Image (cartoon, rainbow, N blue to C red; front, side, top):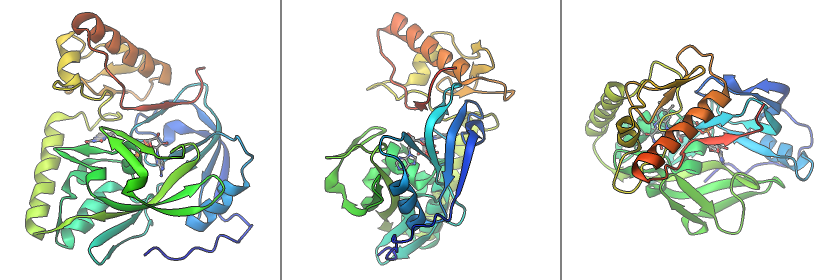
Length: 306
Ligand SMILES: Cc1cc2nc3c(=O)[nH]c(=O)nc-3n(C[C@H](O)[C@H](O)[C@H](O)COP(=O)(O)OP(=O)(O)OC[C@H]3O[C@@H](n4cnc5c(N)ncnc54)[C@H](O)[C@@H]3O)c2cc1C
């Protein structure tokens, strides 16, 4: 069980910053500013902070920003910067508990060390547990919600709720909370995961193999946000984009990766969010024109154009 939280305090203990450059917080290293950015001290502090916001204040939770772009005109609301190297994580009986702030590779490593299998896929997802829950992050045949036992959420009013999987609907890179607007009115603060009892060395070996596959196929040395588009049924977005001759195609400072056509890179760190978005639209239009397939972006775009 999670520690009981004292949310009666009224004094905020986290850090509130104004005009926060979001390029610092997203893996594309591009984009505009957030009007306000809050770094909560802990879960109780986060609950108190959310309850203190004016009704209607736009709120965007940001984990490691590995699937996110804030437009050049900025986000006129409050971002909550959740990632923390000190987020709590532990084994509780048959379940592994991790706060939303924890980086996914840490979950994969702890699970392997404790002799669980089934968490290896998380080793190469460079986001937080909160981001993985929100996106149903997955790869190599596994998805986050395959292994969720239950989650803890916080609402705009600061209420913490333990929720079971029955409260959610999920699919490929898509999660919905029945009866509430996930990401606008309610957010993840922790998850309990059920991995199968297995072999520590086998899990560690698989982590190594999966990471090696990534290093061989993805442009990990350049700022990027992973796969830009979801794969359409029965096909691969990368294959379609490559077949349109778009590998290496650039708009402003953004370029379609030569190594993996479903990745957009910011090689010199000079891309504007508008360059990246224009490249996304260009790739979509070319694939639509040539194959009649509508690619759906996987990356999340927030904020206003410049
Ligand atoms: C090199 C690279 C490889 C990648 N490989 C994969 C892969 O194999 N599979 C895959 O699925 N993804 C992959 N990604 C994309 C990304 O890592 C995942 O989508 C990840 O789950 C995002 O986590 P994050 O913490 O960075 O979320 P962010 O990018 O910070 O946020 C993503 C979305 O989740 C929301 N969100 C974040 N935290 C919370 C929360 N606590 N509660 C509610 N909503 C929240 C945000 O508001 C936003 O809408 C890759 C990215 C990179 C850069």
